Amino acid sequence: MMKTIDNLAVADKRVLVRADLNVPLEGGRVTDDGRIQAALPTLNTLLDRGAEVIVCSHLGRPKGAPDPKYSLAPVAGRLGDMLGRRVRLAADTVGPSARAAVSELRPGGVVMLENLRFNAAETSKDDVQRGLFADQLAELADQYVSDGFGAVHRKHASVYDVALRLPHAAGYLVKAEVDALGRLTANIRRPYVVALGGAKVADKFDAFGSLITAADRILVGGAMAFPFLVARGDKVGTSLLEASQVAAAADLLERAAPGQIELPSDVVVAAEPGGSGTVVPANAIPSDQMALDIGPQTAMRFAAALFPAQTVFWNGPMGMFEREPYAGGTLAVAQALLDGEAFTVVGGGDTGAAIRALGFAEDAFGYVSTGGGASLEFIQGKTLPGLAALEE
Ligand code: ADP
Ligand code: MG
Image (cartoon, rainbow, N blue to C red; front, side, top):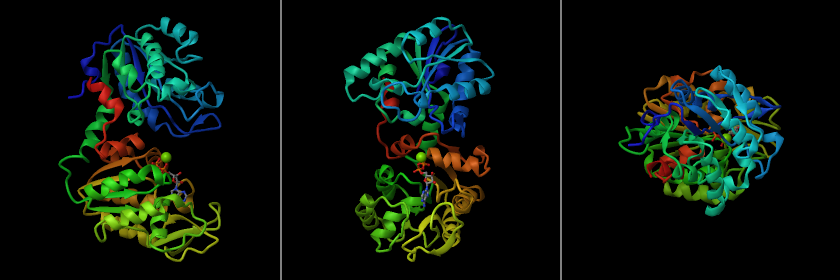
């Protein structure tokens, strides 16, 4: 059993909470606050119980040094609004500003440390270097709470090493993720149908391989479909193709049972993402056009395949949903999940953002995971460093 914050006596204690507040920003504004929302239950509970809360997170991929572009300032502002309390942002992560802010904390107060990845040691492969940074993080607090599910697959100082240095527990988000994703790893109710899309193809192919063993059917859309179409002998025009993945796609097609992998039969194409689209067969994409969504016939086939499912895992939008003409496939898959009876897990940062942007209520789905890579690794049965550290 995983210990949660309900097993920690936190009153008057300094509690370091590793959250995943890596939200999308545009012009210094938070465009989707789903991950901040997901951190609230743990933070509110700790604050109500009289803890002195120190929140830390990474944001984007700064190069191991402070970079104002990746400051957590907009996130601290939004978190403060959502908590209805002042969130004081330190100007550094473990330096003088952080130490001063923490020393002035009172029960019910919140300090946010600046972006963890302003420190090269946070993500270092060197255990000693990471350990020294974890020592500094641990010095700020009495206890450690792991609630940044989106980062638990990383062996990073704030995720792994610091848990070994302080009394620790899982936050409610990590607990909920582990419970929901656990239903995709054991005693799976069948049929189990998986829908995979999005643009990070290489990152997801490992998971694809193990899903061939676990799932009854795999529906493929988004840019994920292009290496498969090419492997099958089709041309994909100027579509976003990860050409290095064509051989891997051919291998997956070979390993899968006949009909287990379903590819788009029609797609929406345009000369560029700005234009309005035209529907063409998936094996007839014009050489000067790119496919930006699955077509209506594919959307209907996918909906029909999802309907009898008892368990569904969906990761990756079916098209460039951010633009209205190419949101149809993603909308159709989301709607099919609501119409069916399956226990549904939606994973992936952009997939979660997509259902919110398209106006669906998150709680209409069985579970919306905040972790992209982390959820994919979890359902493969891999050991995630941030979860293993909590067992110690
Ligand atoms: P997630 O974060 O849910 O794991 P990804 O990061 O893999 O998903 O991919 C999300 C992105 O994929 C979205 O920004 C979407 O616009 C893009 N995308 C999906 N289909 C296509 C396509 N056919 N062409 C270009 N981009 C696509
Ligand atoms: Mg993404």
